[in-house]
Image (cartoon, rainbow, N blue to C red; front, side, top):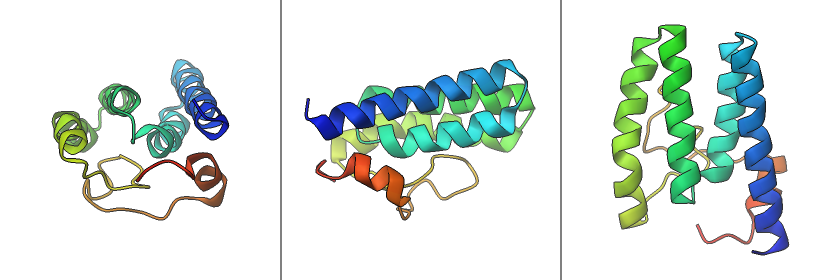
Length: 119
């Protein structure tokens, strides 16, 4: 794994850990923000991408957000298809509040961790 890839993986895992901590404290909003960061970092790799959507589903469920739950169920179903056909909306934050197919601008601090990766 390249140095950039390793840093991206570490940042992904840190965001996932932050999400768990916020969720344990009952702060779903902050948990979801950490998961959005993790989504941007991990969406180009199948297992991390699926993990993020699973955790987003759990946060939506515990918050009682039916729209988020439905959106995450759809995204979980789409993850394998997106990876098989190589069509992933780079930069998309992964929540039901954004179009699942819309590429989004990547924040500069995350772009540095992702650069060099085939998109």
